[in-house]
Figure 1 (cartoon, protein in one colour):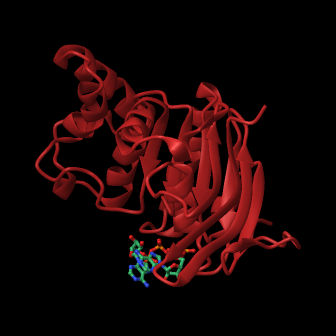
Figure 2 (cartoon, rainbow, N blue to C red):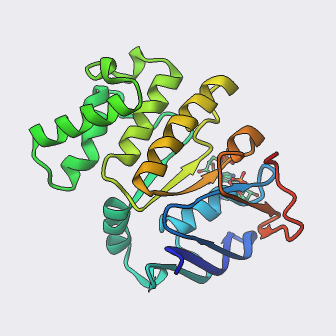
Length: 226
Ligand code: ADP
Ligand code: ADP
């Protein structure tokens, strides 16, 4: 059975429809790229799937529970426990070091300081940035910051990671290196990833691609991945 399923999801901003009846599902461990032109609704879909934005109609089910019916507090607990999120840039807390940033989700989940720091160092190491553990984001390159952000998204070992243009602020080589490292780790962990991107080289890492156009899935399915 799929891990996460959306059925007939509609979302409007005021009177403007952003999603017009989207069906989507992702299985455990699967990597699905969501592509399509700017403004087609990719970010909105990701936010609805992650339970960040409530939908106007349709259903979002996670492990057979209709999370659309849950309270904001319950969805927030689910996001903390089972989901990870990754954005384009500017997501690290500037006052905290790399290790503190990566440890943060564990501290929020109730881990002790020492345990959280040790886990954070391990995750920084998986992404080749262990030597930056005590640096703040301003002292790191964009690629290094994004490696830390990926480590932070994965540190709680989520079932699903929602990644919105995670390489969008990086040049192509750096972007592919960061995503390649992330894909290797999520394959080992069996983490599912919803990967919003407009770049063919990034969509190529996914198992499957869905194409949105104007708030609906393009049935031709002609995506960007080679
Ligand atoms: P994409 O991620 O594919 O670029 P978005 O989901 O960001 O698309 O946006 C889909 C549509 O909804 C666009 O027309 C966009 O302008 C509009 N939109 C997105 N967010 C908002 C918002 N907070 N308020 C009003 N309109 C929005
Ligand atoms: P992306 O395509 O990566 O979502 P955008 O630049 O479209 O990036 O959107 C950045 C932020 O602005 C998002 O939080 C989105 O919800 C919001 N936004 C996008 N379009 C609009 C809009 N027309 N009116 C208000 N907010 C918007």
